[in-house]
Length: 375
Image 1 (cartoon, rainbow, N blue to C red):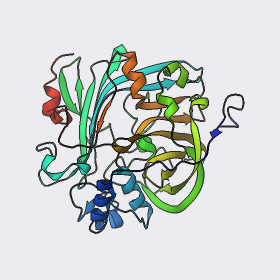
Image 2 (cartoon, rainbow, N blue to C red; image 1 turned 90 degrees about the vertical axis):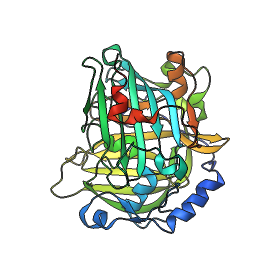
Image 3 (cartoon, rainbow, N blue to C red; image 1 turned 135 degrees about the vertical axis):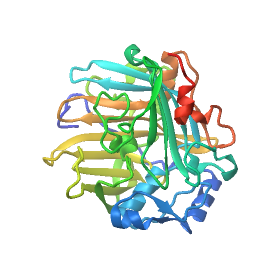
Image 4 (cartoon, one colour; image 1 turned 90 degrees about the horizontal axis):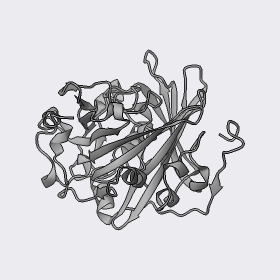
């Protein structure tokens, strides 16, 4: 980035503050989970993504990881909140600095962290355990308004079982192109893939990469980025013409886990190699590097975490992914406070209480999507 944008790119480095902490019950659940859970034999031998011998109620499965697969599971099941209900904003910035804002209503649940008594029924097949459910309804740009998707994945079958509501046709169809390996992320104009969501995402039942755990190292990473959520900081202040406004981003020296994923022989993927850096304290992704099939550094990303102190929780406030070859960059739909102000909505609802989900969880099923009915 320094080489590509020498006139505008900079990093403001601050003293380290190790703020990534959770409520006591999160660590208790981790101790309980770690005594039992295992990666299933099919993942080790055939690449089928799944876990066995897990216990309900959450927890980081492998607090002392032995390989790259265990690190990825820790990341996938890290605690970002038990449920979210919010307006979100994504930005698509072209090589000339032109920006398109993508605004949507976002609803998410992490059943992995639900108390057993609160687990929803009928959302996924009986006997399976849900990990993550996601729904977005596009509000703008106008040509896409009313488009809604909803879906979940489970521990036993990590394919994202997702359905799409088409307002022009008033019908619901299965959408296997959403949430699958290197398919384009929803509303990203093809500029980012599912594989780089949260800086790294399994994106399907069958693994396409061999994940090698490099170990831990100290890096300057984005941390404690509260400036991005200050009152008066709007999209125009955050989204520059070439990259995020670096004067609003704070870097600190932290220990991170490093995982290097190489494409398996005979498999196809946009990214031949994908290197991810995970926060030691939260298992959340902080950055990644993706290489194309000519071994060129192609796309890089950073993720900006937000720490809540009452109750203690870590959530993603925003991210940035830069295409070094075409000069474009994108942000995933986050930026909750900016999005709410644009559409005169309310601040995000983020909770650790699985008994207080404020929306109908059938939105993640085809039946729930059909109930929308009108544009």
